[in-house]
Image 1 (cartoon, one colour):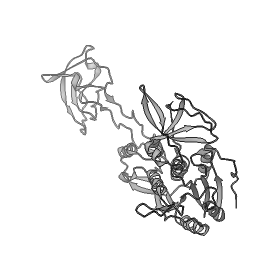
Image 2 (tube, helix red, strand yellow; image 1 turned 45 degrees about the vertical axis):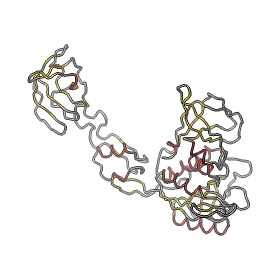
Image 3 (cartoon, helix red, strand yellow; image 1 turned 180 degrees about the vertical axis):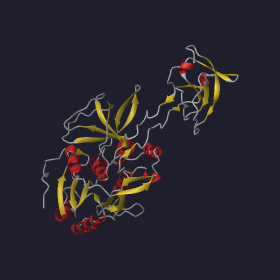
Image 4 (cartoon, one colour; image 1 turned 90 degrees about the vertical axis):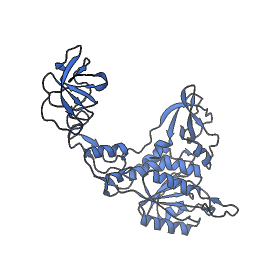
Length: 410
């Protein structure tokens, strides 16, 4: 059995840890066909290739009048009308020379027409219409200008948003191949934990991590099974992990991975499988661990609530998305001005609870004063995380990377 070599003071850099996790992502889930309305938030398993040109034919981008630009004098003029074409109509007759036709948005242009003039720029005139000067091609959507038949439209591994569902629908796709949802077993560890609604004895606390992590995992589109609270005993840890590994694709625990004498999860993993890494150069969240049991990946998150939340979003999220079939898994930070100073160098990368505030017309990143690893109130106040690199300082107005929660919770 392999042993983790990242003990002692050798803290693993965050990016290196994420890279190692991604390399150990399990094989992709099975593919299933679902109805298009049920595919929202799922991961596309089959690429989409355009079956036809989009648009399929030249059509009007405006309500107005279609004409042949060469039929109109350079200064504009009046042309007689040769009919009316609404969206959904199919007119085989070409546009007569020297005429215009009333047309509506989305309607197919008749053969010979090459220009559309918006109706608000035109003036009815008896059986004709007075038109301003035009340029050939104005307000016309050309066949294939968006997509040509045979063009790759969507790649496998894309999370399907409303716009992707609309794009699939535009090609007549009624059912789509997506990856089965990744199935995650979630365990909370700690004798001190009680569930909301229960009475607290002295020394006990409510299990905040269960609900915070359930929210994170479900926001990522995963199927989650939540196990009862795991007591701090080695035998109980072994039994619970063995059962969970037999039932789920990935195991995630909170607590039990630090250096305390009552932290048994890490020891149970060593006995049942492998511990690949432990302790990262991250604050909060240093005791995060990663390994496997029964051939299933395991991520051990810290027990402190804010640390569990932040490491779930920063470290566990890319791994879980890759295991779900996503290709783009790393959050994209914004580079903004800092509205705070950070003058104390730290050997760990800082993920600071922050939000954006407008200062003199410019958005700045502001910090909550409570940055302790157990403080969820600051995470609730925050809209994202400000990132201060290892051994770096920061002055007010300096550039800082900012990760919005809106980027991390998808």
